[in-house]
Image (tube, rainbow, N blue to C red; front, top):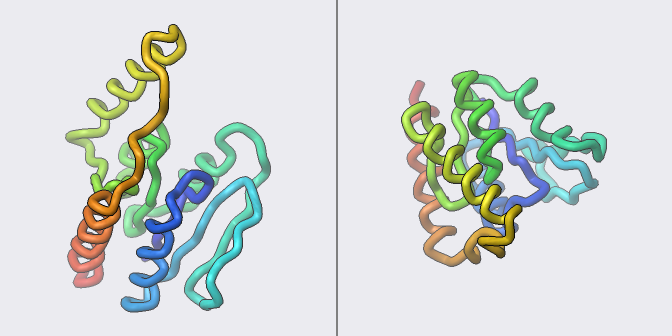
Length: 150
């Protein structure tokens, strides 16, 4: 079991929560990004630097993550690819992507993308709040509790 982080756009507080959980339960963490990342001094935490091409980190995660791992990502198309392979994916706001909800999330994301491209909607995701951080921490703890017992 590993926790993979799609690290290019992952909020700092989410990484910190994952790092603490890693130390607490002894689960390895791998950050994947197209830029060099600093990691805390821990043998459990590593970083992989992929080339800067479009979706290179996504391709790497799809190739490397297994069904016993967890991937942290806000990238809904990436989450859809992972879920299709049976790889669990959790977003930084604490929502676990599943076969039951990923198609709706992907359709909503695509609609918003289309509205942004036509200028009907502007802006990006909502600000990351303490309640999001708490929801993520709770979801991560639940997932770790359920999957460490196996």
